[in-house]
Length: 461
Image (cartoon, rainbow, N blue to C red; front, side):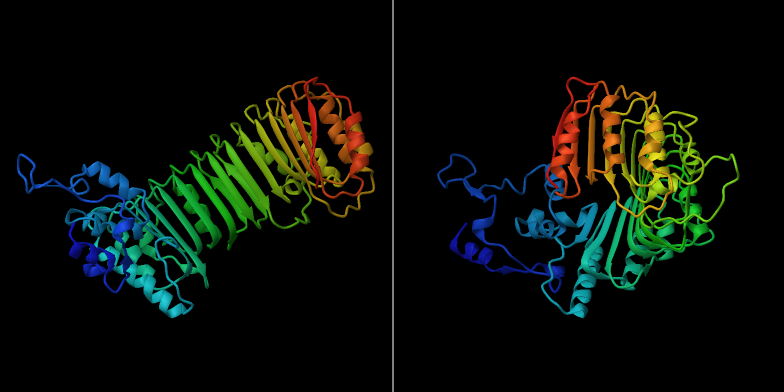
């Protein structure tokens, strides 16, 4: 490479149709590969140039581009003439903070810059788009998104991710419901109003909805009409409060928000569940005498549950109504259980005990204490002592308990676990504060252990 060529590479480079979108500075020293020339006295074809970059196999080029951000993929166009338009056939288009580097505080300028970049990339793109992600910290719900969704709906996009980080809910354009090749749909801060003619996404396997608004009937229809749905995530939703989950192929369910009720229907393959109820439920309804409460109803359609996380106030929801000593059908496949519990609440303690008794193959248990005022007339500790009978945890190996304050009912529960877990290997205890921590530790070390291998690990708060 002669001196003139080196000077060209050291200058700021703008390329063709993307000028006005962005420009990149590429120095010769930063190039990972340099063109090599055959010496002039080489015995054959002395003027031939060996260009390793240009002659890489197509599959290798595609692999390299797939590991780069969209911005860096565009920058490869200066490597050689054969690389100039390699990026325009990228199947995955990701417009995020890494790809869209905009140094400005002017929201209008940022908006126009994002729109111009996306427009130019889509204009130059050739070939199918399999993944489209738009997520920028300064992105607001602009009408230009409608055009992009309409453009994508005419293709065969399989993965669509839209995250609006600022401003009001963006009303999702109706053409998104025409994307029948979608396998993964992820939306953040959006308003969903599917048309009456919407029959579901026939190929959708993963649905992630966070900070969204939609009506009750629309939500139920969306879930039930996606027959191949395997993963469902719901976080901070509005417009519906009754979670009716009808999904025969569902394997993973993660929900966190404010809701009144939850019902599973035909979810016999569901294996991983995490549920957080973000408000303290106040139950005014009186269940019919003798009828099953929320605990029995919740587990009725979860025979293959392997991992369960009960977060925030959801255990209090499960404890509403009649709490049996054991579930009618045991959770034979449940191996991991995490519970957020108020040890001062008798019904929550009974509900937790019911879950433990109904999980004969439980291997890992996590419990995080949640402190609340409790006005129960009966003493929780004395009532629970009567229930710590005839229960062995023959598979339990690891226990983590955090947030406790040394109350009698908390220590009794720990004693109960240690005395009935013959293969326990480790119990980790982390109190909520240092107050009374030393006395608590001395009490823990006095407890009898059914497992000779069990060790108690005390962590400072």
